[in-house]
Length: 600
Image (cartoon, rainbow, N blue to C red; front, side):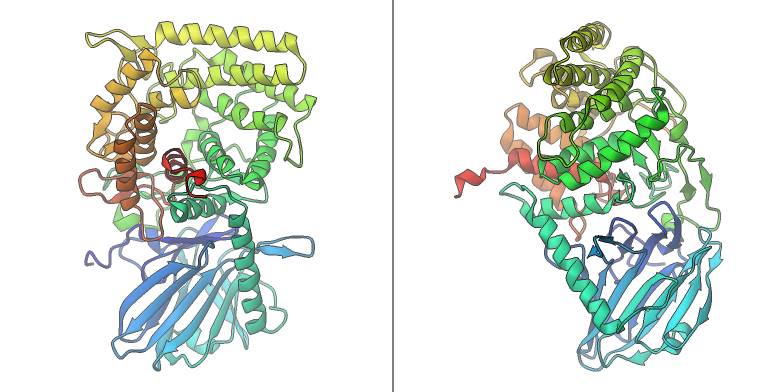
């Protein structure tokens, strides 16, 4: 397979907060899971090595020589234009329906594609081959006059179309002489005129997204980039429960042949905290309110006990990690993992990451459901775990699988939990509880200052853990969490050490020390954004802006980023689109942008 045919991360997400899909640069749907993001990938061509003709839905234009793609402004509706050597051309419009209907949000398990002839006399072939059971085989089919049923699992998918069904089933080329509509969704008869209904769905869905974007508070500069990241972060929320997944994919390796292949289609408490913080800065309260409901259910289920680092979008706690043996992996670089054993890990930062977003509901008068005294009592149970575990070993935010230490980031998150609980207690008139949490906050601070600070010949710095003096990029978050001020001498010394040891040109490593899989080979994109934030705080704004523009130059044509980046070649690696990375774009744009008051 030539390099041009190799799968890459030039992908365009579509979705409706129930299902999602990734469209590649040829207009093919190469990744999509049903009935939700962590379900069976019926479209799995992205992870099927060089076997690209299974788990795919594409439209082949005879004589094709060119493809162009763009989103419809302020929506996740994708337009792909295919052009042929004889001058003929077609346009493919992709979206997943989402709009209010009958008093609730209509977001079916459905993908909609409209194919239009726009020049000449184009001939196309429809290749629609969903698979079942993680690539075990092609889905069996049955058909009717205007539909095809694909038996992908317990619930079939039904394609309703005004294209010739026989041509679709047999993959035969045919002349496209008018707009043709494809609705792949629930296994039930399509009600109404397909053409009119599908076009109505597209218009109503487009209007929903453009109205949602209209309510965002965005920075003056980099507006398109911020809007695209915000839309995509919303697509990463499973609206039914409010959970937010770390990415839409599984097992895109962090580096070539590294076997650092993980399933990110779950809700990490940590990643979701950062996502909510970023969207909250844009005023996207709908996402936050849904997520807070998800958190309340997690806290209820834990009954004051240990919180896991991650859960399924339905709140399921057991996410056993297995491999999908029928899928070869991204570019053949398996394994393809299903589930994530990190759910068994102990990661003490998660307690702070539950408290911090929950605190807003005690102060924000805009919310439909303000927090109650009972909510504070429940949140205190989480805080008690933060207090109890602040100086206990854990796997840390980077989820080391073979070692545990008392990680500084986890301890600082525990401090933040106590600090914010004290703020809430004061706000709701509970001075006795405020005093308890202030005392705990101060005790944790003293512990961190005593144990995490490492003296050396260069003046010293905070270490990544109490036990060792190695560095990791999360130390830069000590200012964001308000543990330190930007002008704090210890922070400045730590920043200098982190930059010296972990910066690689325009990019940043998580850490340089070897882990369970050896030394890291790629930069971690969110850490580069943390570097940009730190440069801004240090008054190095010109450098921060230059570095930010460099990071934006690495985004895909869709304006997005994955988790990792090869700092020598610039190639993107890791699961896509990665919420962490999109959060970095939003946060840095907000910090570095000119003010609206400068131009109006």
